[in-house]
Length: 466
Image (tube, rainbow, N blue to C red; front, side):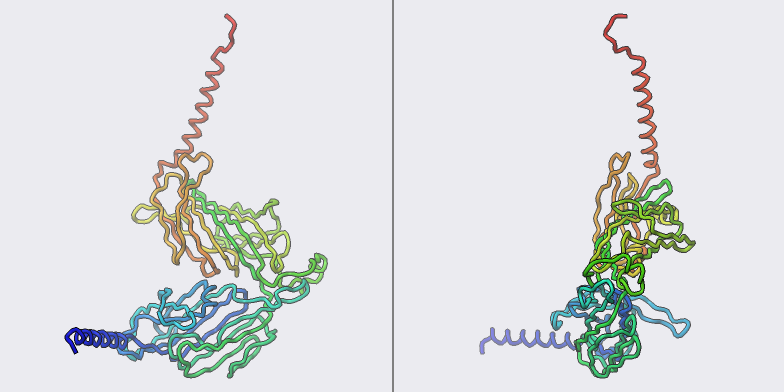
């Protein structure tokens, strides 16, 4: 054996030993217990997951992984995690950071999310994690078409066992339906049903990435309200007003309506006819709202009710016609707000808008949301702070009496749920001297108009001799 071969063998042994030591130092996690509660009472699926994890490795563990099947990850709207500190009445929930991650050997295309622990787990230590994740567009109507007098049934696909990259010692799943009208469900013993709740488990000693597919077929007549596109324009005026305009493209995403629509039957038998349709929606608006209007392409819609309170305002809207499966409606909601309730000044002298992200309509999914914050003319150095990833860009908007245009901050996000209605901020620099631009333009225009009139009255434009 020559010298070159000996060197290659030595390097191979060193690399293999280093790989073995690095893999052995990777922290090992096992799930001592997992309880999953799936809420199917609306068109949005909410899953509450409680995990008790233990570090069985030789090194500290700074994060815990969550796994989702590809079909579920595609419609995943939000993942939130927290841990508890204290006991009983002094117990508090501390939010944890959750970010998508990847591993090279993930089976069946599972998507992984990493939960960053506040304090790394030492060897033998355990921690309890509370996880909430929300999935949209995962309830499939079956049958896909129903008549006006039929109720709506949907399919829900999931797994009786928790999909996890770790070994699970004990696991149980609860599924809650809107009512006790369950046509069928998959049995994975032990399986029990009591009223509106299905229970799968208790299961023991589950290997990593265990998956037991189940299907639940049940009645769900709640409104499947989906806003295909929502464009919100927030216009800031330093003269004391904040103007908001929401442009909606609404759709009923449930089982499609077949046959003819009978208005007489719909009004005479409201408890039977069109039970899966909806004719009104509730919007939560900020307090002290004023100048509210609700209109579509035809004009103003008078079938709305506004309740103004000190903490919130509620606007109940009714489209011109009830919405059945597959039907759509387009409308605009606009209102004004006091500027001092939403515009503030930071310690470094910047102005910033503090407004709510998301859609004000309750229990509504938004496929695509665009928020345009129109800053006053003369604003500089705009920036935004949003508590979740969004697409950001800048554009220029022109209005009456504008000279250089108004800087507009555009924020875009897809697949939103009511839990996204949390505040965001837009910062910018603004000098009060720019508030005089439009009044000076008006005064100058009026002055020049009178000067022109005086000159016209004093000039003799005739061609005859005096």
